[in-house]
Image (cartoon, rainbow, N blue to C red; front, side, top):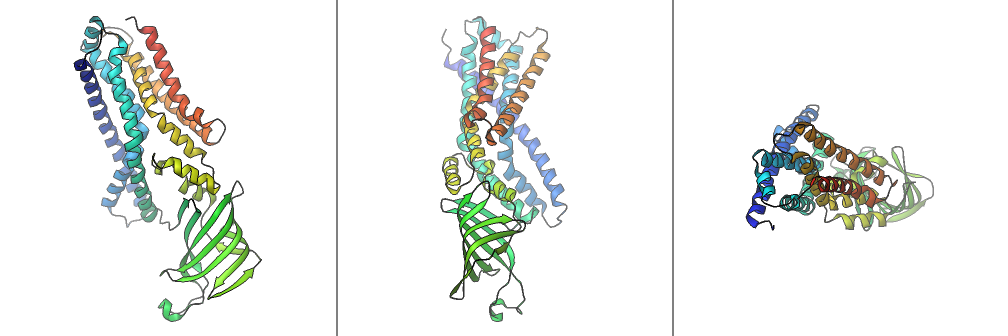
Length: 382
């Protein structure tokens, strides 16, 4: 028999409502815990208003919430099938001549559409909001002034330093000290890894009031402890240029980990911008494997959500009086967490280039889908 539109819309609506309610509940719990954690961190500062912490937790919510989306899809599907079975609705549907695949189809379509929605809408919104959260966190909680960005023109760094400079006292507004507060902007056209050697480097010096002091050009630079060490340097200052073949040092508080985490954090990148950003990183000489794995995992989300629904069906659609229902549901929860940890493990292997990117991103979804499909084919007798 061909399933009717009325039945399909009823099943899809029933599942969508359960999914929405469960998502709102889980997000509320996450928001509560994140807010408590931010309050704990802010208590060490003493100057962060509580309203800002509530705002920061809200900005972080869409990105953190995406982690629990597969669980929400799985648990809401299990609850939906349990409801339909307890009320004998699935039994009536099966007795009417419909196969399990026919009433699974509308629920699976909702899961797939939700995966597409996460990929093209929720992820970009979450990336934008988490970027604002990280900016507020860096300013109010970490008190960091370093800024790092990668473009097609290369790597750009901005950091606060103390500068030895000779500038007029009238320009400073204070008596001339030996060291003045300012910042430098470092630009490198290319980065050679794993040595972390910058090529074709330019350093711009500014005072705290944005007055330009000098420019330093170098053929290369490397990050040493607390310093950028520049080679083959030409210093441009007060309209004159002079060469400096010795090691020219620029103080810094940055580490290699700081730079890597700042520009290659997948969670802060929108799905739509990831391909171009991956290309930009590779052109600049950086390793973009972690971003590639993240991008492919986003593409696999619709398949993963469909697989979660199949797994939920295998453990939930049992007759109401059948024994062992609790054990079957517990096994479904176990399988869900197993898929989650397998996904994280394979993505870690992919990011470290121990397995191919496609294998790391798509294997968990494919395994879960084929597992649910094979079990449903074994238990289906219609």
